[in-house]
Length: 295
Image 1 (cartoon, rainbow, N blue to C red):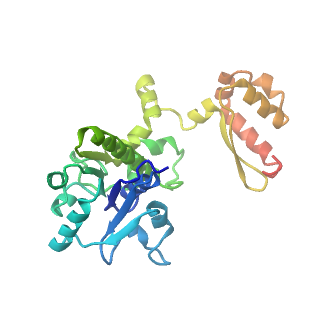
Image 2 (cartoon, rainbow, N blue to C red):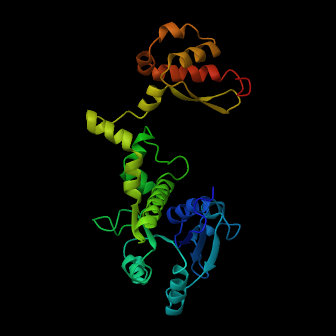
Image 3 (cartoon, rainbow, N blue to C red):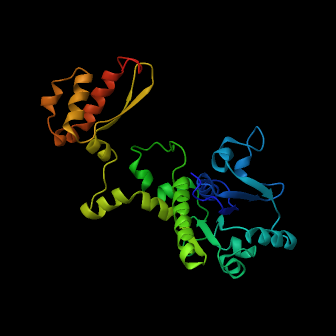
């Protein structure tokens, strides 16, 4: 899709949130230029193999790039010349950093009134946590999201980053809305997105349930209500099943695993929700009897 063809984005971000937000706009056809410090670059560039790590590639594909020392007056003026050609300016840093460099929103608005300025922070522009650094795990933990995905006292964190890319999606959404408004208003906007509020937004279902019932949702409750299972087969490979709330899917699963008696033992969705733990254990034992390809 080339819906953003003709739109130029300057990406001054690092790590994930800013670069991935810019990447999403590039996927829609925008011309994205990544601006990096000479001799340093994005910290995600580096690994034991050099300056093009898989993490950097994942969040910076489909971009052009330039190195520029905009802490120096001559570099800053060159950056302003580049900004004059841009529609969107993306940064992810703590409040005050861009202002100290002469690149705060108010300064850029005066010189480039049609610019969409996207500022991504950990906790917003003000408040008691505003000046604190924030990374993915901080957003997952403080938002409560992590409590919905773990049980027990294992200190390890599973899976890839969640809070960072979620924040990027919200940032890209805000930028798109600002670009649409600019068509009618002919003026730029400040788009402010932060890691914590983005994760709270993602957790809207468990949070709403808590306010409605006064109780947190048990870790496996959503899986129980939707009859979802991650099952391990004999060869160690896994199958993900989602029987949903419809009886017909449950009945087909029972027949597929040669447990037709379950249709009468657990005839209603409420029965299956109540006995989810038992069903999960028994289904896992059944699926361990064959390799995944056989299933």
